[in-house]
Length: 313
Ligand SMILES: Nc1nc2c(ncn2[C@@H]2O[C@H](COP(=O)(O)OP(=O)(O)OP(=O)(O)O)[C@@H](O)[C@H]2O)c(=O)[nH]1
Ligand SMILES: [Mg+2]
Image (cartoon, rainbow, N blue to C red; front, side, top):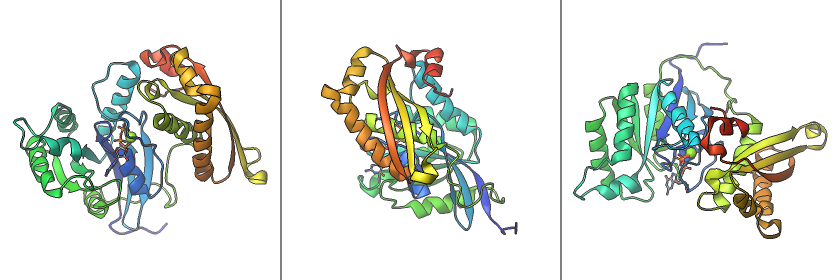
């Protein structure tokens, strides 16, 4: 292979509190949807690796669960995945939702709230260069972001740059890409240019179904739900353009099972219809999807429960 002069390659972690827009930014940087997103916090539970390659740079991007105060075994495992990522990368992108922090300006309290201060501590400890991403700029007036960036600059000695952007619209993305390129080491690419993820189709399938549960159910139900793909049959993929999938939606209590099935099976049907549509696009073929719901009592509360639903800790 010919050497590419001054090509940059490296690992980038996308971290921040739940709902900051990390998965939306990952998808925007990849130019297609890899990570599931929702307006509810704690959507992402596992690390998701996407690879963005252009003519100057290969950024291996790690989307992570939101950093938060964790009580259950599931939440602790999620936060651990984020904190571990900090030690493994060349540069960290710390995202904050500006609708949260800019709202504090002018009030008689520090601009950085407790959640931001906790993240500052973790980032200082990890010692990696940090790019602060002031997100959701499409919905806050840009001048309100400056005091937030000032506060971050004062709090975080290893801050390398700050980029205001909208992960949703992609506005400001080119500035972030320039900053990433400047921060990554000169190195040859690790993956071929068309390689876009390390995540298996089976895992993505479970995630798409879980996303529909996040979109269609409320309160504790999405947080009590895991999805396990039990059959992923590709035997007719090449000949018929068809993949057959059987997946279990697992909840913690019988009452939650009732909610997910819905009156006359209406809810599970809606989940299935929306998931099948996305899966068809993702897998680029027809999808036969069978869903069923089962109860694994209190699976979020113990390490054994997490293993039982196939959660990789
Ligand atoms: N208006 C606006 N909304 C955004 C932007 N970025 C993300 N969002 C929305 O914010 C919500 C959370 O986005 P996610 O990408 O799921 O956030 P996350 O940081 O991955 O959240 P967790 O996985 O829960 O930690 C979704 O409803 C997104 O559509 C943005 O730039 N502008
Ligand atoms: Mg996410």
